[in-house]
Amino acid sequence: MTRPLEILLPTTIDTTIALPGGVRATPYDPAAELPASTTDAQGLVLWGCSAAWTKAAVSRLPRLRWVQTLGAGWEAVAAAGFGDDVVICNGATLHDATVAEHALMLSLAAARRLDLLLRAQFAGEWSRRGGLQDLDNAREFTTLAGARCLIWGFGGIGRTLAPYLRMLGAEVTGVASTAGERDGFRVVAGDDVDGLLPATDLLIMILPDDDATRHALDARRIGLLPPTAWLVNVGRGSTVDESALAEALAGGRLGGAALDVFETEPLPAGSPLWTLPNVIVSPHAAGGRPRGYAELIAHNAAALLGTGSLRNVVRAAR
Image (tube, rainbow, N blue to C red; front, side, top):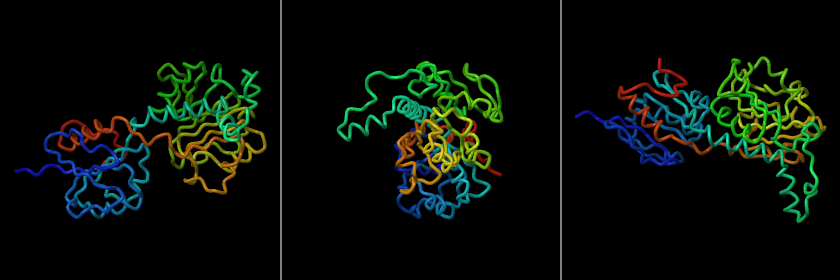
């Protein structure tokens, strides 16, 4: 009798996944060591696993052929040291809806200054944000209606978010590796972003973490933005020069920032971003709720058995 293909599923997800015949699911606790009985596993799904746990799994699973992280980022998984014969797949598309929803929330919170309203509420004060208000984003960013929004990183999340912004009246332009039109939205190449920043009311960054994107938004580019513009970052903290950002915010050279990701996480207690009056801090909460993971896992498990091709491959086996 042929032994079933064993795949390890973390208890941080619903492990009752309908897997194809010939595949056996074994749940594991990411907070505990893998038991010795799992050493024959050929598939490993990661979600909520620490870097140390993932690194330890490399030596504990000598027969591993496939690693499926449910996160969109996969660099930390590759850095754990899995052999070249192990294919790595990521969770691209699983977070499109949830991160887009969070980015929309931060954009609206910035426009309506929800942070100031909450501070007034907690202080028992009637906020001065009530009453007559400005609708001219050239004087202060207050509305998405007519706002010039630039989405830097126009992948799945950006393409999910763009229609939401347009529905509320924003003029949306995307920035990607290549120019063109995607889903009815104008997209410019990354090399041309400088020409768009001076006419941007809301800059939404959804860039990945790599050498090419480190401090993509640096002091020079921050200086190109209008002093009323707001930044929303739901990509990676490494893509923004936080020191330059804090200086611009404190000096009144930028309207504000709503940030879900940071260069160091958790955000250090001494960071000025905690106390600046025009910053909204979100604790890397945009994702964390992958949608459609069961279908992706089942599909890739079938691919391991020879039915179809693996999806979301970010590092092929060699």
